[in-house]
Length: 138
Image (cartoon, rainbow, N blue to C red; front, side, top):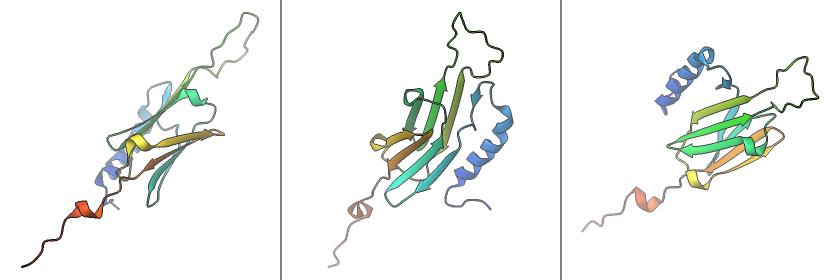
């Protein structure tokens, strides 16, 4: 059933499903599993990023979108090491998603613990005074 409150969400989900088979080699667009939740005050995005260091992760919030990118390089070779199999090499993942509410993009924070990134973005709070004003009837 179409999402009437956010029609772009349906389009984004369709592109996500279509793009799964067309990802460029070496960059996993869908390799970042995310949960997006919302409270009265915040939007919270939780992402699985196992095997990365905090310094490997880049989080950006802009124009109603959150982008998570991470890259690591496991190519530390030494002369005295002989590999029989080498599968752990350079790895990049990236995920960009539309946020379900307007947020204070510069006021967010992120934590990374045990391979799980949690990004908390406070929602833009509207003042009742900005929604209009009373007009006296004479």
